[in-house]
Length: 328
Ligand SMILES: [Zn+2]
Image (cartoon, rainbow, N blue to C red; front, side, top):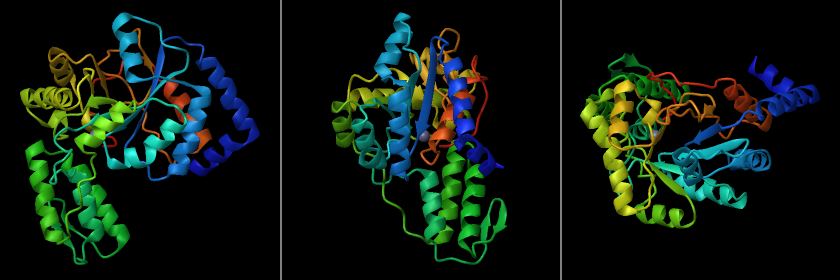
């Protein structure tokens, strides 16, 4: 079904249809589209996407968006913001050279307990690494029961099952659950893949904007409210201290938020925050602490990227306040 759709989009009729729909939706004012990425494993695909966006959209920087929001200035037509979460070293090695080549501004959301911390390995990377590299082939005792590890496919499936289970736990419990599972797998720990503070400083000097993404990357809906707000506020404070000149802008880890978290962030002085709810933002009526983002991924071909941006543009308006599991 997915193949049929992709083929239809790639046909000349499909292309004409996309162009017609695009020209209709691009007349709407004050619409902001936001794309989100994490790691780029297909640089050629990412390069193609950036080539397309540079030609068809006005890719704006975070300071431009912030100024438009704060001072009520109009956004340019077809405004689009490109964001990366988690500050993986892969961003500097792979994505940033491509973005620079196309002269595209970008925003990087940094979980601030991870730079320069040898123990700073995201729990999902720890879990995936342990399951991919474990020598163990007999079933594994987990909170979901005994799960098979005999084939590569089974180990990947176990990773996905456990990852979703861990996200349902309170933050403290989630880390100890991952620790207990990894201990049984007898695999070496992966290296920290997050950019160091000095690398982040160089990137900001080259024009990358930074935003807060908590210190420890907990799901904010799985923490007591005071701790959730402190995680956000302390990450902004870390960025101000280590880098300086960082705007009060935030991205919810895994897109997890609720009314209480939004109100807490507002009280803490945040002016804008990004969810992982798909859609386009109408800045005249969207709560700036519930901005929508679209996780398209660099594997998407150009027609798929175009149709996803179009699909997203059909969802405009107030984002729902909800917990939305999504990409980390
Ligand atoms: Zn994240």
